[in-house]
Amino acid sequence: MQSWGLSDQGCVRKQNQDAYHIEKLDRNTQLCVVCDGMGGAKSGNIASSLAIDVFVQEVKRSWTANMKKPEIEQMLRSAVKLANFTVYDQSMQFEEFDGMGTTLVAVLVRGRYATVVNVGDSRAYQVGRNGICQLTRDHSLVQMMVERGELTPEMARTYPGKNFITRAIGTEPMVMCDVYHLELDKGDCLLLCSDGLSNMMDDQEILFEVVHGVNKQFCCQRLLEIAKNRGAPDNVTSILIMV
Image: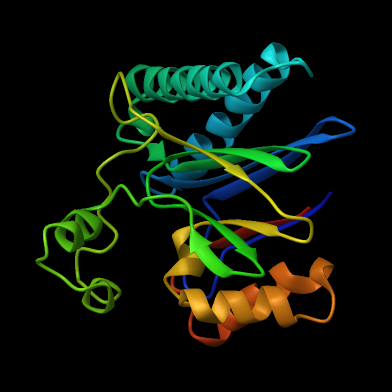
């Protein structure tokens, strides 16, 4: 298993409020996390980095190599809960952090099995011989409108309220997360990314770059270059995991 990550402020933003982390829990297990902070120049980057620190440390504290799927799921849910409480507590204590929050998408990969957890609209994709599959569901206004039939997926890509998310880490005392379990084939890849990338490229473009790239270690760099060539109005972050 190999993993690569990259984060960039993009072409417009003055500060990078995204954050990512790759952690090897044991020789057969990796934890990868992407967060996209919000709340203004003084606090978005605090929210994303704090959420990752707390989430990763809680997983490392709880992790054992003999965990079953239900135990892994509960561990990840507990780590999300603690990250949410910590970010929310900081936002309540300090005026300059008022209203801060962050998305969070993470995957724990153990051999051929993976568990994904997400809050917000940062995404996880599976890329393999059967194409590309978006594993996570965006917690966003436009996703709700698509599901109600008010927007098509194509319309949603340019809808003015696209950036309004309905769940985030740290904006409320409690938050619900989604958890997904999946089995991977040898050679499959998982891609975690902030919306700074997914807003700039459609699924088939991502599929092409991951599958047909000459070297997987440069894939995140190629994805970033494409996003920046198209203007990259937001921060751009991605992690690629190859099984």
